[in-house]
Amino acid sequence: MRQVTLKRDTAETKIDLSLCLDGKGESEINTGCGFLDHMLTLFARHGDFDLKVSCEGDTQVDYHHTAEDIGIVLGAAFKEALGDKKGIVRYGNMILPMDETLILSAIDFSGRSYLGYALDIPTEKVGDFDTELCEEFWLAFVRQAECTLHIRQLAGYNSHHIIEGAFKSVARSIRAAVK
Image (cartoon, rainbow, N blue to C red; front, side, top):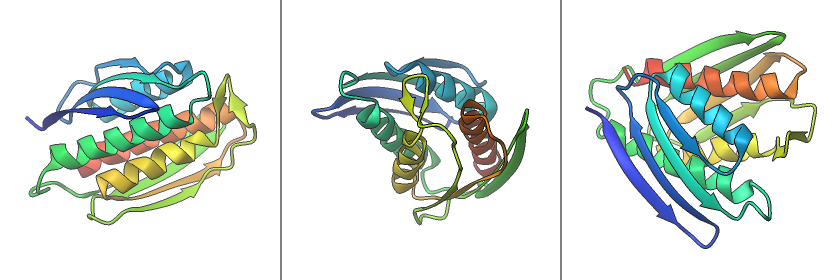
Protein backbone atom coordinates (compact mmCIF):
# COMPACT_ATOMS: atom_id res chain seq x y z
CA MET A 1 0.00 0.00 0.00
CA ARG A 2 1.32 3.43 -0.93
CA GLN A 3 1.27 5.32 2.33
CA VAL A 4 3.52 7.62 4.29
CA THR A 5 3.65 9.49 7.58
CA LEU A 6 5.66 12.70 7.84
CA LYS A 7 6.39 15.33 10.47
CA ARG A 8 7.55 18.92 10.12
CA ASP A 9 8.61 21.01 13.09
CA THR A 10 9.66 24.62 12.52
CA ALA A 11 9.57 27.85 14.51
CA GLU A 12 6.14 28.56 12.98
CA THR A 13 4.43 25.16 12.68
CA LYS A 14 4.38 21.62 14.00
CA ILE A 15 2.74 19.26 11.52
CA ASP A 16 1.93 15.55 11.62
CA LEU A 17 0.57 14.19 8.35
CA SER A 18 -0.25 10.72 7.10
CA LEU A 19 -1.38 9.90 3.58
CA CYS A 20 -2.61 6.70 1.96
CA LEU A 21 -3.01 6.97 -1.80
CA ASP A 22 -5.14 3.83 -1.97
CA GLY A 23 -7.69 4.85 0.61
CA LYS A 24 -11.40 5.44 0.88
CA GLY A 25 -11.43 9.23 1.12
CA GLU A 26 -11.42 9.27 4.90
CA SER A 27 -9.84 12.16 6.76
CA GLU A 28 -9.03 13.59 10.16
CA ILE A 29 -8.03 17.21 9.69
CA ASN A 30 -7.13 19.76 12.36
CA THR A 31 -5.08 22.65 11.00
CA GLY A 32 -6.33 25.41 13.30
CA CYS A 33 -8.03 27.01 10.27
CA GLY A 34 -11.62 25.94 9.67
CA PHE A 35 -11.66 26.79 5.97
CA LEU A 36 -8.42 24.89 5.30
CA ASP A 37 -9.81 21.92 7.26
CA HIS A 38 -12.86 22.01 4.97
CA MET A 39 -10.69 22.12 1.81
CA LEU A 40 -8.42 19.25 2.92
CA THR A 41 -11.41 17.12 3.93
CA LEU A 42 -12.88 17.60 0.44
CA PHE A 43 -9.45 16.99 -1.14
CA ALA A 44 -9.23 13.61 0.63
CA ARG A 45 -12.81 12.66 -0.26
CA HIS A 46 -12.56 13.59 -3.94
CA GLY A 47 -9.14 11.98 -4.34
CA ASP A 48 -10.09 8.79 -2.45
CA PHE A 49 -7.01 9.44 -0.30
CA ASP A 50 -6.95 8.71 3.41
CA LEU A 51 -5.48 11.82 4.96
CA LYS A 52 -4.70 12.82 8.53
CA VAL A 53 -3.32 16.28 9.22
CA SER A 54 -2.60 17.86 12.58
CA CYS A 55 -1.03 21.30 12.68
CA GLU A 56 -0.12 23.64 15.49
CA GLY A 57 0.78 26.92 13.82
CA ASP A 58 1.31 30.58 14.57
CA THR A 59 -2.31 31.31 13.73
CA GLN A 60 -2.31 34.28 16.10
CA VAL A 61 -0.30 35.98 13.32
CA ASP A 62 -2.29 34.62 10.35
CA TYR A 63 -2.66 31.35 8.44
CA HIS A 64 0.25 31.88 6.02
CA HIS A 65 2.75 29.49 7.61
CA THR A 66 0.04 26.94 8.33
CA ALA A 67 -1.19 26.85 4.71
CA GLU A 68 2.29 26.95 3.17
CA ASP A 69 3.82 24.35 5.49
CA ILE A 70 0.91 21.94 5.08
CA GLY A 71 1.35 22.31 1.31
CA ILE A 72 5.04 21.48 1.76
CA VAL A 73 4.38 18.36 3.84
CA LEU A 74 1.50 17.16 1.65
CA GLY A 75 3.64 17.54 -1.48
CA ALA A 76 6.51 15.68 0.18
CA ALA A 77 4.10 12.93 1.23
CA PHE A 78 2.90 12.44 -2.36
CA LYS A 79 6.48 12.31 -3.62
CA GLU A 80 7.46 9.72 -1.04
CA ALA A 81 4.29 7.64 -1.42
CA LEU A 82 4.77 7.48 -5.21
CA GLY A 83 8.36 6.29 -4.85
CA ASP A 84 9.89 5.63 -8.27
CA LYS A 85 6.45 6.24 -9.90
CA LYS A 86 6.72 3.04 -11.94
CA GLY A 87 3.36 1.88 -13.17
CA ILE A 88 1.39 5.06 -12.48
CA VAL A 89 -0.63 6.80 -15.18
CA ARG A 90 1.39 9.98 -14.40
CA TYR A 91 -1.08 12.42 -16.01
CA GLY A 92 -4.50 13.45 -14.78
CA ASN A 93 -7.01 16.17 -15.49
CA MET A 94 -10.50 17.26 -14.49
CA ILE A 95 -12.96 19.96 -15.41
CA LEU A 96 -15.10 20.32 -12.31
CA PRO A 97 -18.37 22.25 -12.16
CA MET A 98 -19.53 23.60 -8.80
CA ASP A 99 -22.61 25.78 -9.07
CA GLU A 100 -21.56 28.87 -11.08
CA THR A 101 -17.90 27.87 -10.93
CA LEU A 102 -15.99 25.77 -13.45
CA ILE A 103 -12.40 24.76 -12.64
CA LEU A 104 -9.93 22.93 -14.87
CA SER A 105 -6.91 21.20 -13.37
CA ALA A 106 -4.22 19.08 -14.96
CA ILE A 107 -1.25 17.40 -13.33
CA ASP A 108 1.88 15.59 -14.45
CA PHE A 109 4.05 13.83 -11.89
CA SER A 110 7.02 14.66 -14.09
CA GLY A 111 9.72 15.25 -11.49
CA ARG A 112 9.70 18.94 -12.46
CA SER A 113 8.01 21.60 -10.35
CA TYR A 114 5.73 24.09 -12.04
CA LEU A 115 2.48 25.77 -11.02
CA GLY A 116 0.26 27.38 -13.63
CA TYR A 117 -2.25 29.20 -11.42
CA ALA A 118 -5.11 31.18 -12.94
CA LEU A 119 -7.79 31.67 -10.32
CA ASP A 120 -9.48 35.06 -10.09
CA ILE A 121 -10.75 35.07 -6.53
CA PRO A 122 -12.84 38.22 -6.05
CA THR A 123 -12.56 38.62 -2.26
CA GLU A 124 -9.50 38.90 -0.04
CA LYS A 125 -10.93 36.51 2.54
CA VAL A 126 -13.25 33.56 2.92
CA GLY A 127 -14.14 33.67 6.59
CA ASP A 128 -10.82 34.46 8.22
CA PHE A 129 -8.76 32.70 5.51
CA ASP A 130 -6.75 34.98 3.20
CA THR A 131 -7.63 33.82 -0.31
CA GLU A 132 -4.09 34.54 -1.58
CA LEU A 133 -2.99 31.57 0.54
CA CYS A 134 -4.64 29.21 -1.93
CA GLU A 135 -1.83 29.93 -4.39
CA GLU A 136 0.81 29.67 -1.64
CA PHE A 137 -0.53 26.24 -0.69
CA TRP A 138 -0.40 24.87 -4.24
CA LEU A 139 3.02 26.42 -4.93
CA ALA A 140 4.44 24.73 -1.83
CA PHE A 141 2.78 21.46 -2.86
CA VAL A 142 4.22 21.37 -6.40
CA ARG A 143 7.71 22.26 -5.22
CA GLN A 144 7.81 19.27 -2.89
CA ALA A 145 5.80 16.81 -4.99
CA GLU A 146 7.95 17.72 -8.00
CA CYS A 147 4.98 17.87 -10.32
CA THR A 148 3.54 20.18 -12.93
CA LEU A 149 0.12 21.45 -11.93
CA HIS A 150 -2.20 23.79 -13.82
CA ILE A 151 -5.31 25.20 -12.17
CA ARG A 152 -7.58 27.39 -14.32
CA GLN A 153 -10.84 29.08 -13.52
CA LEU A 154 -13.13 28.89 -16.53
CA ALA A 155 -16.14 30.46 -14.77
CA GLY A 156 -17.19 31.59 -11.32
CA TYR A 157 -17.63 34.55 -9.02
CA ASN A 158 -18.08 33.07 -5.53
CA SER A 159 -14.72 32.97 -3.73
CA HIS A 160 -15.62 29.95 -1.62
CA HIS A 161 -16.80 27.99 -4.68
CA ILE A 162 -13.71 28.90 -6.70
CA ILE A 163 -11.29 27.66 -4.05
CA GLU A 164 -13.39 24.60 -3.22
CA GLY A 165 -13.69 23.76 -6.91
CA ALA A 166 -9.91 23.98 -7.23
CA PHE A 167 -9.26 21.60 -4.32
CA LYS A 168 -11.84 19.11 -5.63
CA SER A 169 -10.61 19.32 -9.23
CA VAL A 170 -6.95 18.89 -8.26
CA ALA A 171 -7.81 15.93 -6.03
CA ARG A 172 -9.59 14.19 -8.90
CA SER A 173 -6.71 14.97 -11.28
CA ILE A 174 -4.24 13.50 -8.82
CA ARG A 175 -6.45 10.44 -8.28
CA ALA A 176 -6.33 9.76 -12.02
CA ALA A 177 -2.57 10.40 -12.27
CA VAL A 178 -1.53 8.09 -9.42
CA LYS A 179 -3.52 5.04 -10.61
